[in-house]
Each structure stands twice: as C-alpha cells, then as structure tokens.
Length: 261
Image (cartoon, rainbow, N blue to C red):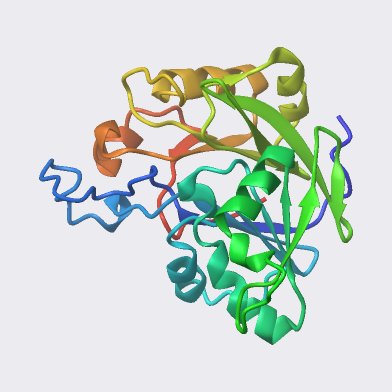
C-alpha cells in the first residue's frame, strides 16, 4: 500500500507499561521486585523522530518524566490513540513547549477524544484564560490519512474491547496499543511494514487487550520485518525469560529502547 513519503525514522519507547505501570504500587511479585531495568515500565508512549520533527504518540501521566529523560527539546505534535487516563493525563505538561516554541501544541485525535480533552482540561478552553495554562490546538482526525507538515500519518482502527481506538502508521512503521481486535480491512493498512509495535498485555487472555498469543497471531498475519511488543503488564513475566520464548523477529520492548526504521 502507499504509506506516504518515506523518511529516515528513529523510534524511542518512552514507556512500555500498562495503565498502572510496572512495578505496581504495593505489589511484591517477582517482576515488580525485579532489579532488571527492562522490567521497570512507565505508561506506554513512543517518540517518533522523522523529517527533522519530533512526534509523540500518547501523553500519559509520565509524559513530563519521559520528556526530561530523553531530552526532548522540541515537539511538533502529539497523536492520541484514545482518551483513557494513561494516554492523555500528561497533556498539562506541554506548557514548557508552549513557552519555548511560542505557539500552541497541536494535538491530533478523533471527535470523541477531542470532547474528552475539552472536558478534562476545561480550564484550557474557558473564556477566562488563567495565566500560564497550556495552549492546545486540537485537530480532529478520522479514518482518512492526514499530514503533520510533510509527514503522512495513516490511522488504523482497532477496538479496545468495545471502544474504538486508533493506531497510526507512518511510513514503514506502525504503532498499535490498547487493542483487542483489528478488522480485516484495517489490517491491510499494516502490510509491507518494516516495524510493527503492538500491545501484548500478558499471556492469559484479556477482554480489552491482545495477549501474547493474539499479538503473535497478528504479527504472523501482517508479516512485518520486525515486531516489538509493548503495553506489558507484570503478569507477562520477566523480560529476560519472555524474550527467550519469542520468534526471532519479535522482541519484547523496554523503556528507553531506540530503533531505526
């Protein structure tokens, strides 16, 4: 399929954990107590560097920490997969970018996501603009491809149980999170990928996320050159052990991992 103009692309995993992160508060399981840094997971998000621009997919509660850790000095836009807390509650921290870049942050999301952002961050859109509040430019998307400057982005529709969510394809790279189902027609958008990132919550089945076997089934069906698993819970098991169980072109992602597409 035509995925738009290809650019050199670097993708950094800012977070690879579930809505509660890993370790979980008050959990004493072996994964949560692991000393392996690959078992420490912030809320899921990626940084995409391409065409001289930085894009972030999802800005959860760890957004500030992630931007500081990876020294992200400029940010062109944020793409939002859906409106759950672990994907949007860091948006207040765009204020520094507003100040440095002297403009609102462009945030791309579908109509329902836009409505949620306006409700949760109501003070941003109030008639009285309190000094120092974030500046957001909400850009509504649908199933059609859209451009962030010269970067072509193709939405990929999936379902988070019954909630419609979007993944995104940029060039030969695609990112899917919080999905438990992708329609056959949407899978066609995932053909010919060099890199697919897909959520795999745990080994046991889950109502609203792919488990490990379901993620591997999707990977086998669309056949990317390489695939990385993200949105991983402590119930998946230690990174060291799970990595040994995966096909040779599939990798368990971890926070801070950088890949070139």
